[in-house]
Picture 1 (cartoon, helix red, strand yellow):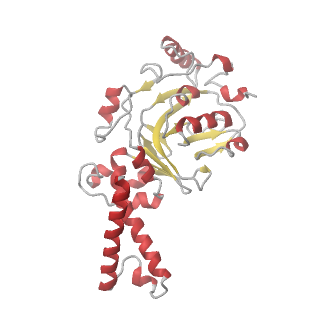
Picture 2: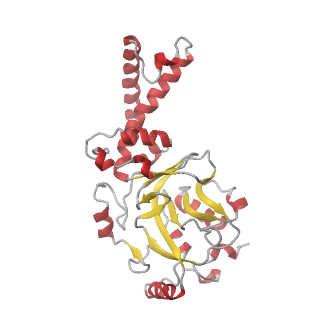
Picture 3: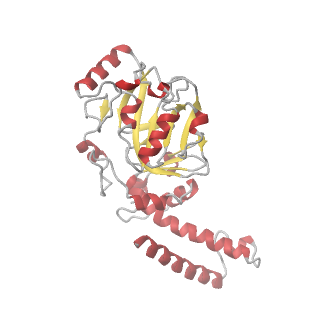
Length: 322
């Protein structure tokens, strides 16, 4: 049985049968979005594939490799970027990795890693005169009303919906369990990050998709206006761009600029191998921790590690090339 609570629009409720299935949002249908040309202009460091609207499209293969990264590994390998093009650039181009991490979330399914491409959405408190103009413009472009489902219906496989609801609890519930299930199906389990709230937690908890949210409330979404779609938004103290690689683990969420992710993942292979070798040596029971960690000092152990590193890196590169 359909529960109509999942079909509340922004600012006032809509009947379930009145909701449209929406194609990519017209550029002038909400307060602020980017044209394809603007998206490219504001993301010039990304030289790879793009979606039709210009949003950077990091490859599925790279996203899968990023699934093995922890928050700590992202920070470590972000900070160690080299100067080669497309692999992180210099320190100024890379920015401060800590500025792209945000914690303090309630985390659904903490053992399930979240990785995907950001689709951004921002709300502001509603006011009737503004809502009237926004929705009139939407109707002129074939959209009956702008609301949460307008953007939810735009989602594609591999996307993570990232929503600024300015921490709102009552009335800041971006989805309940029905729409959460839809997002899971549309994104193939990509995920949800909302600086706001959700509802129907009991039902959502049964759905196999990661989510990060500030609070839970039984109310439906209300008293807000869709302000912007697929433009820079603020999540906590982080600026999030459409197409950022969103990586969530039990500690929190990091938003990685798409042009940096390949270099971070490449360098993380070395981190993984170092940790792998370190634990293997500890398991031998012959060494003190200081003999092995953080780096060996004995020339024989250094040589052993370097040979192990070269062998494992080649194995990983061969695997990634398939």
